[in-house]
Image (cartoon, rainbow, N blue to C red):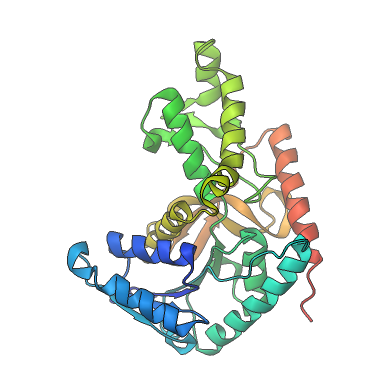
Amino acid sequence: MKNDNRKVALVGTGFVGMSYAYAMLNQNACDELVLIDIDRKKAEGEAMDLNHGLAFSGSHMKIYAGAYEDCKDADIVAISAGVSQKPGESRLDLLQRNTEVFRSIIDPVVSSGFQGVFLIATNPVDIMAHITQKLSGFDRKHVIGTGTTLDTARLRYMLGEYFQVDPRNVHAYVMGEHGDSEFVPWSQALIATKPVLQICRENGGNQNCEGMERISKDVKNAAQKIIEAKKSTYYGIGMAMVRITKAILGNESSVLTVSAMLDGEYGRHDVYVGVPCIVNRNGIERIISLSLTKEESDLFNHSCDLLQQTYQGIQFG
């Protein structure tokens, strides 16, 4: 990966994609941003709109609408494109349609000569990341899903509110599927270096384990609450994508709960799932295996089982 020109190609200029692009601009996260969409005119309009804000951003990004051949020398191809679920359509049927959409994206990206890192945000993100790895043939380290990165940020925010502490000093993770079977491994949750569960036991009434369970449910249901209020979620996931992008382009070796393919970690194989990973310019440098309790391991395995069952139902033709 080159360090002289940080180039990102974004496929899909909907709400999520453009929240990502806008946050990229404001954080000066790359030097060159290519917007690719089946609706070329929309991509051109979005590029114009972003460029008109350059003077206020302190950034010198080159932003333009492009095509798949522009992915050739990109460091990252971020994908937020996909089709929406039709009324009465099953989850598997939706996945089948999105598989074909991704085939129409991945094939020309790979044909361009792209050799960077795929970053997937399209839901269900664990499955779509797996589909991307299958269609591209890329090494598992070079295909990343946003996973439970946003869920983890929500968890740390809520724990920070609960304990009245800066969320940056909260070390806790959401693991598993980005969806209904995700869970919080509370045995690994810390405030500074002190276990959260120990703090709850010591504090008793005001801050207790029941409060942790409530927070866990609130994290899991956060997206649905937002969707009920404003129809969709996009700012949070857009910023999560930027955080992952900066870890890759900056070669940070940051620990993020992205969706990664397991190959023996946690005793699982051939499944994309949200786990703490060291992320740098190589993509996923290493998956961190946490010491889960028996109950937490059962929850993790349940999540992996659901994801594998769903993935195995997809027809690749």
